[in-house]
Image (cartoon, rainbow, N blue to C red; front, side, top):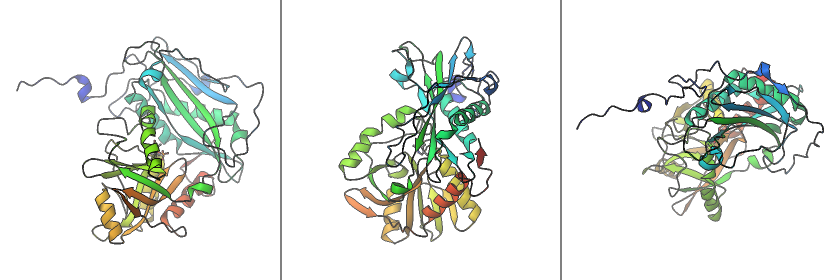
Length: 393
Ligand SMILES: *Cc1c(COP(=O)(O)O)cnc(C)c1O
């Protein structure tokens, strides 16, 4: 067979030359043509909305008074960043984010401590992940430190919206859209990056309750070579159908399986951990490796790093299959299973419906690993434990 030279983009990152995103092989070299926080223009809202009562408030339904907006186009690059009154966007009906899901987002939180100071949790990791998603979506690069500085400024402007509570928080939703105003499937020549803020109540009221999962290989969330390792909107819109089928089966969320061996990958929009005695008899905390189909969660990374530091049991990234889980349960080796993510930190799993069988997962409320991790992480987030993972706004 004659050898055909591989296209340049098959061996290296696709060229983003001229998009303002000259990206190195790791996709993370900040681009000096980025917008700058020192150029921020601030247009304060004339009126302020009343702050809602957060008890029983549905996630992400109330927004603060301001938003950060930064526009980009291929002719002039990034415009000056603006903090402006929260309001609707005006978007061309052919906008590529709307037609082809040229889009991505992030999810992070600001927490108010007992000392009344507002903190972010490892936000530079969100900036890294956002840059990677932007690269994959063919959206322009930006300087991560500059965006973080703009976000800090936005949170400062809406500081009173950070709940005065040791369990509620202000959810931060950076969003990046391709706003190409034409129907060609191509790299956008225009883009819009914006950040909105939404106060969210405590997850403790419902979060401590174990969730039930529907495990079926009928739908897959993510695949090798796909975008499941990026927070791109299309991944989530496409998952809603399966979520409702899970509910039809009497379960709360989907346990996403992958491959003929039914690997356990993620739960709903959370990473997944199994705490058990493994097949070699070792006490182990395990989560699937970042092999391209797993979203690299910041809570996931933090749990791995914390548990490694404890040196109390084996901590590892490894493949886990439904057969591993079933055998583990049969032999009473499973201690706990839980999801992890910014929204709820950790969420214990109580039951998995798989091949018509209800697998009961042990989940003691007291002295569980999940509750210990919850405490350690929230202590850092709310400034009760001093940590370099915490960044003052
Ligand atoms: C956001 C997300 C997570 C959790 O990531 P965190 O950074 O911990 O919030 C896990 N899985 C999916 C699919 C996600 O979208």
